[in-house]
Amino acid sequence: METLSSSSIISTAIKPYPLLSRTKNTRFSCSMKVASSFSYQKFIQYALDETKLSTSDLIPSSLQEDFSTLKSLDGKTELKMCSFKASKIRLLRSLSIETSEGMQVLDFAVFPEAEFDLPIFCANFFTSANINIVVLDLNPLHDVINETHYKEKYYKNLIPLGVKYSEAWLNLMDHAIEETDHSQISLNLEAQHRYLTWRAQKDPGFHVLKRLIGETHAKDVVKKFLFSGVKDLGNKTFLDYFPEYESKNGSIIEKRSIIGKSFEKRPWNTRGVFIGDTFG
Image (cartoon, rainbow, N blue to C red; front, side, top):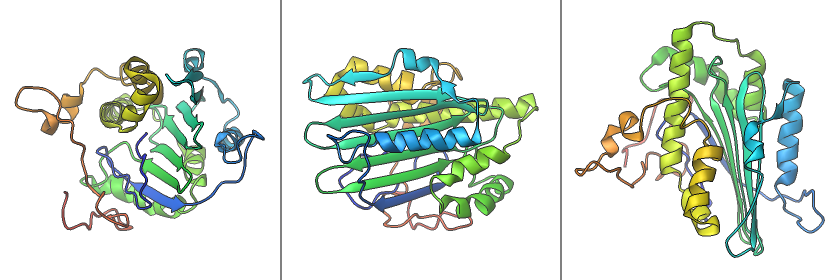
């Protein structure tokens, strides 16, 4: 879970090529349960229904057999997981957490098949008694900072779509053309593995999961469910991708990148140029 914060101002710029992020304080009144007036299960069902309109072959993922429901160590919190796949979607998955105190978290993501150059879509929701936070991200597979042609490809078409929130990724999927060049497919595969490796190592949601279900289960949920593929899509390690995080003794520095986190608004302009004064 990329963002779990009590702040109403969030930047979700992450190491692997941030593209679009939207943060919005809002309130939800829909629910699939009478007992929970702010359940995120309704949103999950809506997302699945909308996806089925764009792809008719959406089916449960094999991950569903091992990851469906977990109870916290104290028995007061329930974690619900669901996962699906389709011809253009390697993994569509969600993790929702509801505590007895009324706090709710939803981590929703869609990862494309390597044959399709589509950004990774992430939606993070947080609800407590005092605040509701929504963060939506589109993370391109490749470098949009240094590769000018790639940046133009994304920013020309995606900035307007990003304003439409949930329609952004499905519109892209509808028009995505299957890649046949094996070298490009390999690049897409490595780029997605790079993203998964970063998230599996640095995602702050791990600490929340660790408190709820213990370290062993938390590692399984993060590496085998939330960021499934980190062990299967490539062989490179975290330090292979991000050598700047290697400490003098060879271990991984725990500190996360803070690029963009000190800005009240997204520190990239509509052309994808970083306009912040410092990288933190």
